[in-house]
Length: 199
Image 1 (cartoon, rainbow, N blue to C red):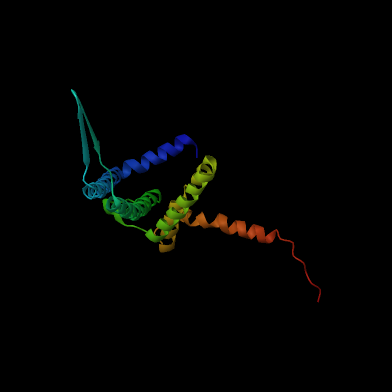
Image 2 (spheres, helix red, strand yellow):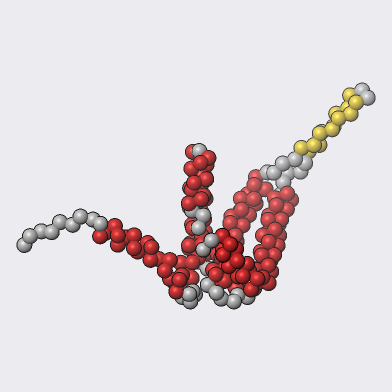
């Protein structure tokens, strides 16, 4: 498949499922925006009272203002970040699951984008990838970029594996996703030199 065929295939799938895709994307955008707004607002409300300093000398006048987050605000931000991470994982698993259904040739509805699949594994995979990317960035920029690129399909594979295990995919092409891994192991085993013992 060349680039033109890929764009044509993608546009065909989008045009047939435009309404569910657009509505689900807008709803998820609003949900995440409202959630982050609530978290940041709570952090601001729990921040220490601002302090203002005034200084006047002769005909001159100066003023300064200082404010910042306290322990409670940072605790809210940390807890809120955890909540956003979990909600984001659920959203990602549900959204990617619906996209895989579209790729499988199924006609999806808006509700198809709100069915989280294998959320625990998605969160665990995202956490592991995030830690590896962070370590790569701390060591040097390039290792972090390399890890991010090589693991870009981790979540998609997790959701796809869940769909295959549950029998969601009807297209036999998706069941072949496991074959390369199996063939690799068979090839490695067959290439091992085996010694036969005489009896």
